[in-house]
Length: 347
Ligand code: DAH
Image (cartoon, rainbow, N blue to C red):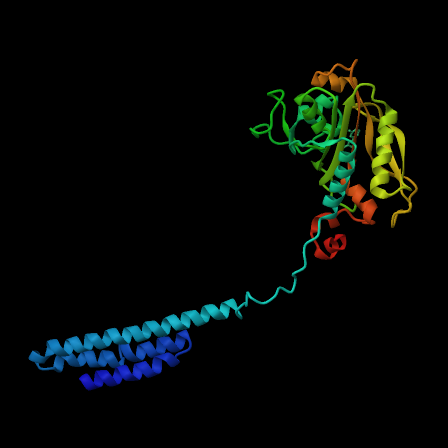
């Protein structure tokens, strides 16, 4: 019996390491320990062994069974590893140099934003920030926008459900709704409520409108807002500042012009057009770039400034529009697609 067991184990030790697949393994296993297996057959012979030898032979068989099982376990583990390796594909050598090791580039919108802020800081403006989740008070009411104004329509503005709570965004009136700000003009109100004039701030940031996306519209875009409040501020100061920033950003041949317009928060109000025919792809003589005007006394009243003493100007413009003009980009969607072929051009 001992010889038969040793022969069986030797055979298993030689045969099992060569087994490659799960079906082969199952077949080999059946040949040893299946109902008609070789070890099973030897175990059946135990009954024919003289009674006094049975405990010793039984022990030998058990030992052999244990050894065989460990051969089987090793073979199965090896097959499992091979299967996993096949699923994972060829090994990756993490020490190889990357095929794409170049440094990243700064997004064109970030470049325009930073350049504008740098230009404005030079003439005394400091950066102000405000939340993108706003309330009706900061976005509309305090900016003298009546409750039936079309800009406040559900069709144009993303409102949160009345049940929404944003503990970090202060409400002026308990019953007002939260919304995604439709313009950065809300930061004017937040800034003025923080302290007295003089004020000279620039506030770049994201804004949201219920627009259908196309080459010139996006439901989420960026604006840059400026507010200047002091004694005896005039339209001439406003025009001079706009001339200065656009020449600084786009070159000395850039011109600006004002067209009368209406905004609730400024009086008089203007739309600002740019002429910059020296830029690539600019064919139109005048391009609308933003809105501006002299801060309306009603806005000063809303923040508790004395409009007899203080005067100011404000303007806001779209950063995408400016970047498209500066770089000759003809579709706003490029800014958000993160296509490296686009982004790499702004290194
Ligand atoms: N908030 C306006 C818009 O989103 C832009 C604007 C117009 C900003 C006039 C101003 C302003 O500060 O005075 O279209």
